Length: 264
Ligand SMILES: Nc1ncnc2c1ncn2[C@@H]1O[C@H](COP(=O)(O)OP(=O)(O)O)[C@@H](O)[C@H]1O
Ligand SMILES: [Mg+2]
Image (cartoon, rainbow, N blue to C red; front, top):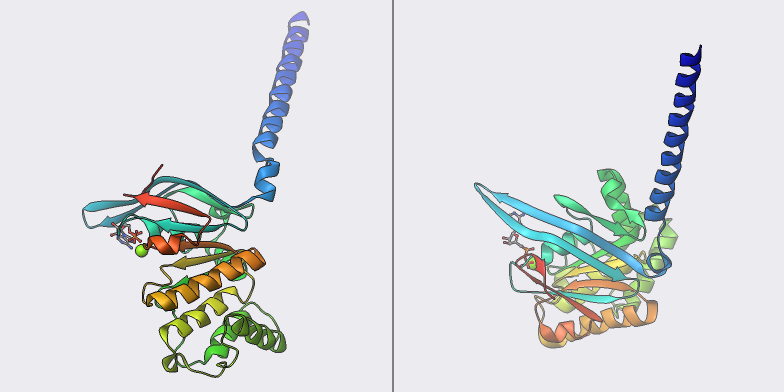
């Protein structure tokens, strides 16, 4: 009897220890998961230990080697660095156009590494906007339709999409060219259509990969002035890759990459 009682007492003690450990574990995960005030208010994108390597036959290219970035809501960021330093690769990780080998990207509190491919697609559609150096417009659609089609994909009504498309095209200075086909527009005008398309749904973040690479300096200035306007007037967060120092002067902060590593 005595032995059984002793065993029971031991068992109760063990239970108590386990319970205490569990409570402590819960408490500490609470502490880890609880975002600080700073994260809630300020951080829109956090890239943590991002590694991206590409296999080229036998050779492994280490495009990003454990990159950490934190971007605040409303910031205008320029990503700079020599050709091949990993700028596009970093933009694609932060913009969810590619998946890192390891590390994660948190956008507006969502740990995107936990999203399935289709959830990621929806997240991109509703929360992010993209501008590329080659504009990526649909050639058979006019300016209005190019913007309209991306809004329709978000499930908005036809009238809502039409008025939103016209409004944003006016905001980029193309109110008088709604029916024009891309082939009848200059490079600068085409890029403005693509900016309108990217911003029509008021994305949390606008990503732009060398948006002025194919434009002369006057037209580049017009595009950058537009970015500045949306950043200052609407608080639009912008992450832009560029290799021109004068473009980077528009940004609040420059992230410099070299060989897949952030400098200083
Ligand atoms: N899809 C890919 N397949 C193989 N290598 C790639 C791929 N994308 C990028 N790389 C390599 O990763 C490195 C960084 O590329 P990238 O991010 O495009 O540089 P940047 O935009 O700064 O010019 C380069 O060495 C490039 O060749
Ligand atoms: Mg690039």
